[in-house]
Structures are given as C-alpha cells and as structure tokens.
Length: 111
Length: 108
Image (cartoon, helix red, strand yellow):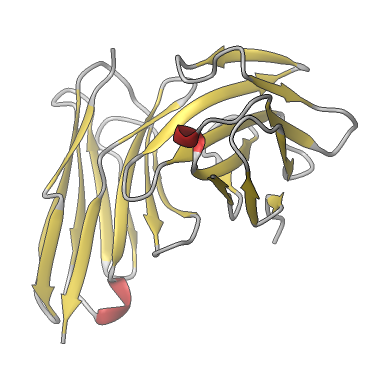
C-alpha cells in the first residue's frame, strides 16, 4: 500500500541553525501539507500546498518557514533559523482531495 | 476561528465495556475524520465522514457525524487492550483542525 515517507526520523540541531525536513508524498496525490505536534499536545496545521504553490498557511508558518517541491517527488519544509520552541514532531501529509494520509514524522529537537 | 473540542481528554476503561468519545466543532463542516495515534507514532486514518448522518464501522469502533449538531462520536464496543491509544477527530475545511485528543487506556 502506498505511503508517505519522511526523512530524517530524528533531527537534533542548535538554535539558529537551518534545517530541512524531507517528505515523499503518495505519488498520485495533489495536495500536500505540513503539520506539527509539540510533545503531548494536539496536531497543528502549518501549511498546505497545491499546484506548486502555497494554498494556505497558519500563523505559525512565519518568514522563518518555507516549503518547496524541488522535483516531482519530494516536498520539503525548511526552517531558516531554528528556535527552541520549534522542537516538535513534524508530519507531512498528502491527499487526492479528502482524507490526508500522514507520514511517520520527523522529531526535531532544537538545543 | 474553528474550534474543535473532544471529551473526555482521558479515559480509562475496563476490557469488555462500551464507551463513547465526543467531538464538537464550532463552524459548519461536512467533512470530519478520526485518527488513531500510538505513543511516538504517526496518525493512522480510521474513519472518513463526509455527510450528515454518516456512520462508519470497523471492528469494535463506530463513528458517526451529525452536521446539524456539529457533533461526531466515536463509539467503542467491548473494548480490548489493543485499542489503547490517543484518538483525534479532525474537521476538514481545506486544512485539518484537530481536536485535543482523547487518551484511551484499556485496563485488563
């Protein structure tokens, strides 16, 4: 069964460093998303992407964040200068139209 | 702003018992999903509810949607230990707004 994959599974970085989280969505899906979950809390929407552009973004998704689909398969989330409060699990998701399927997540720890 | 509330937040129940988790949301939507999350893991899609009155069942779990009441329920029948997890509802209005989650623990 097709699935969303994410790399790396864990990323530890120093405050102020740039990180890139990578995702490979399910191949026939058209909509792509990033969500995050701070430990023990609910899942929060960051950004949605369709037709090679951002379709919606949350207040969390400020100028430090960017997304890209550099080729036909990858979908990346970049955090330019990480802060301590960026520590969270980041989930990529994709969908045809409804029912997003989630990847396994990248646990980001900012020290 | 859409608000999605679940209750209870924590639920301990004995094996074999029945219980219901409630998901209320504040603005109109006719698309709602239920996900399961095991500790440290991703979100597993359980149910897709796309219209008023939708009812879906899978094993010991049954989900329903009442769009007029802005309420979805997840009913657990004759709980077994394997159902221990955190359950989230999520309302779809182009992006998902998740509920607070219900941490379910089934006690043998």
